[in-house]
Amino acid sequence: MRETILLGFAIITLLLTACASPEQMDNETPSTANYEMINKSNAEVTEDDFIYRLVTKKGEYRKGEPVTIYAELEYIGDNETVTIYHAASPFSFPIEEKTRNYSIDYNMNQPLLSTTIKKGEPLREVYKNSGGYGETDEKEYINFVKSFWKDGFPVGYYVVDGFVDFYVQSSINGEDKEEDFYIKAQIDFQVVA
Image (cartoon, rainbow, N blue to C red):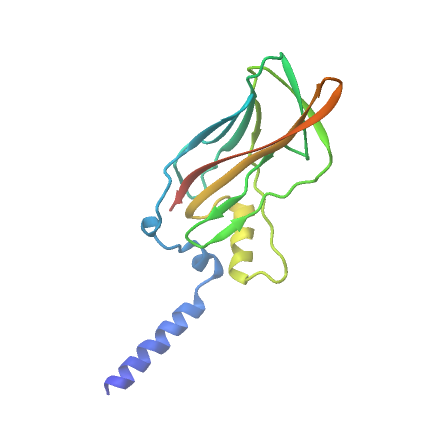
């Protein structure tokens, strides 16, 4: 008798789980209590003549609320301007959703472009939704990315491992020299129901 009741419970649970929509399942995320959160909504790193900043407006957003993330590069050297050489953008915003262990890549074109920055006037770029999936990715991940594109960040805990990647040219004793810069910073935020 007891085995019949347990079997009935198992069948009902299986049927209820099978009837849940992908959106319902994807929006149910584990608690962030199991993660050591950074609790850092802005970061600033100085390297040589440059300051790199990575910022999100808040540490916690509501589901459906726009998430604002931006990066800045400020020149603080001796000259009035500096020209940097980079891909389509010097800024990159790779993001990981920790509760699901999903990566949201930040792909861009790789032409060689140059940008002139005035001393004390930061170059700023605002994050735009990115990411993608392939035909071999799991269905849950594909649903996550589609939801992200359509409705913004799903409920979860996000860590942004932002960086700026560029080089500058200088001439020392008539010899051209390239100096590479790869400056990283990290911030995090939550999206709650």
